[in-house]
Image (cartoon, rainbow, N blue to C red; front, side):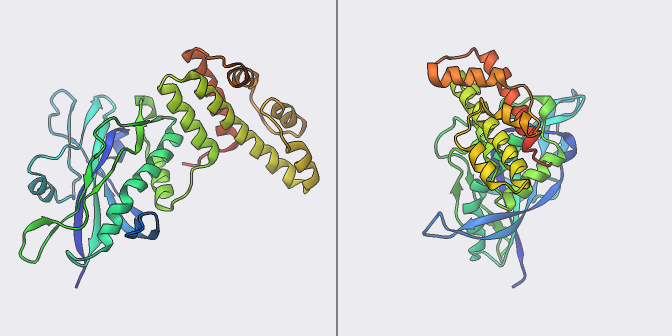
Length: 327
């Protein structure tokens, strides 16, 4: 039987800020399915297409307005199944047309209503989205936070046209739970085409985010939650990981494993700038971050939120210098 198309509205579970050139575009992705009954056993990635909403607004008189469905989506399927008009997003900044996007469409091919591959895509979709959001946070410098909505979350359920021409849901209806999503967005840091393409590729390839970026994301989350002490400790850890790796790479390239083991053994953040200077590894001034982290760890000092924000910027500079994410 020839392949058929099935689609589902794929909610982001939060408003994501996009530059206008991304809208109305389609992106091929690979989503690692999950095999039942062992939910944690990944099967081979399956191809799908990610469709972003239309850049055209439904109420353009004031420059603001609601976004339309993706241009090639079978929105009549989704409307008939949900019983109401699906929500996609809205323009938030008239002059630049930067937009909040609420949901997209996920499209896949299948051989019919009994094709189990679609269930694998559904089971893998939300973990895939979580990886995507982690990469977007690292690439844009935005903050990851949990969406405070009922624990059931949105449900991803594909719809298809059967042999009689009726539109019906099929496969599993999978809840997204409460994944970590982007928050505290700023217009100047809206998702660009390059960042989006890089994050999609990483999520599709199940590429892990480097540890220093994961820890830096965590530092941003803690700062957003008001935990300035935890944020400074995490920021210092992110800088330490990035600088340690840079030093290790520099010394290893000289083929001196004994020197590497001796110098890097039990090295703390405070010693790293001196080692970096000695071996010609670039390092911005980080004494303020080092002192604040030591005070937080050893003396329980809680810095002001503004100070913690500035220290986070220092850590961000170190991580970007030695562990850039190529967009």
